[in-house]
Image 1 (cartoon, rainbow, N blue to C red):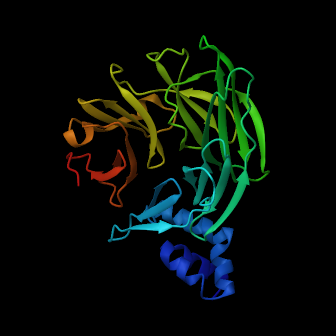
Image 2 (tube, rainbow, N blue to C red):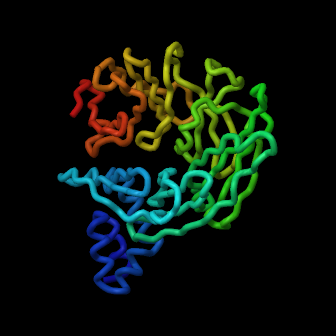
Image 3 (cartoon, rainbow, N blue to C red):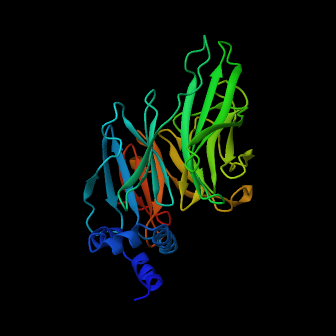
Length: 329
């Protein structure tokens, strides 16, 4: 059988089958591990909304849930950073590559392909420290530069004075191709929610920011393009801003926003055409007690295979929600 035909067939198979077939022969392993088959498999998975796996964990333990399988059993998977001193954080995943990092001050990262069980570990240089201002804010994000075929880690380092004036605020980029950091530009905004460190969609990382340091200052959506390394502001949906907690996330490859009005209701918006204000669509709006009760953290994760349901995560619990009827399971 011609190798290109075999590669096409392999791209249609589930991940579990490919892992077994890697043991057939050296030539099979080399073909399955090749960039050509990996990209074919990724493209097929995206087009068919298949091979969906949810990776999660805490401390040093990593687990995954195969969303395509009839059994919803949670399986453990080896953590490439298991022997690190500090806790492992999942920065994100792009094109089949998962980026793991250890918490400060360890600064070790791993670019990991769970399919072929291969990874590349790198110890990062520490973030810049300014005398008399402590360590400041240092948050990381992960994304993919599709033009240069380069997975990148972005580090945002910000220091403020005692009067909340920005003293130092820069974006640094680590390239997996060059294995080096570059300080690429200033970041002229205040971060609103520091835990939202990695919202990657449409080739850009996104943060909720403001022009003023006050807690009630109007927030904006800042986007950093990983290819052009340009920074811009995106339009927001029209929503009520009183007593609201906002999170940015990704759903179906689109930037989305969760507006949580504690103990009242929750709205989930999706930007269907990137950068177009009128394309913001309210996907879910509910006062269901299961979502608003203690809804400190809520985010959409993925559409079901049928596209009629959305998998939501609420305080580390998961449920499927049907936007058309409000039913959940």
